[in-house]
Image (cartoon, rainbow, N blue to C red; front, side, top):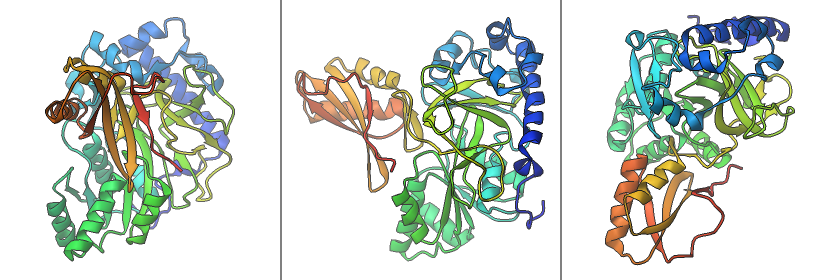
Length: 414
């Protein structure tokens, strides 16, 4: 793979007509594959002629499958709800994400297609990558691992936590690239400065898993690291990514993205904020009109970097109350699980805030009577269920807002 090539491949700079023609063929092929090989879509698309789905207008007439419904769909037919296009015996891994959602992967090169986002940031063959995404149960670590292999980059599998050891590894092994959440990158850089460790080899960062507000981006840049972000999920792989032009996020070549009115499948006008709905061309897990629950909007025109695909503004919050905290999705159903395990709780509300660009969550619980011991017990259950640590604040009955919110995201994304 040539290091002096600006673009990852020729698909990124196709003319709109060439992309539209290829998209027409890919859509019809994927719908035909799903209807023939995927039990879920065989039933859902009973009356659909795959050969007729060659335009975005035709695609928009197909039903939406919601990520928020995936847990229930999978519970009726383990492990993937009949959504997998390949038999289980042909898979490489089965992952578990929060909310008890399972995802497949295969040995296909760069299965999640994240190499494109690394390349757009400036990652090139031979660069050492320090990867702090989790390798345990969730696929985030392997998403970066497979992308790095596709480019030709060795990886330090840092995983999560162990801050002091990770600082030492960076100082000793001199990686050029960081991959992980942006908040942890800042922690590593500041810890290295405090310890007198030389982390100056880090020049590039590809961040994901949580919001990257301007203040945090500037703080990381001021520490000597150029940071970009990408947007993807364990189900869909890469959806969109930043290039060095830093003007919006460019949609990946392996998906079709629609922005629809939340709660419907109806596309909205370009520029209007709506829910991100994605169709992927992945044969292993051929998700069609998969509603992510994320909000975004289309930006006009192509990127100044020369890549010609549609751009979106990036992640702009959630269309439902599910939210992402420290890179992990937390669902209202998980809050309900915590409440169910403690009979003292009358009502609960999970509040998410950002302090110094680090996510914090507080479970506010109305209880008839309680003390620090009860709060500690609830906090332990919260961490066990949500896989994220949070504090618990006890309140008297009637003190919580009567607004119907189980999860209140109080973070600012400006």
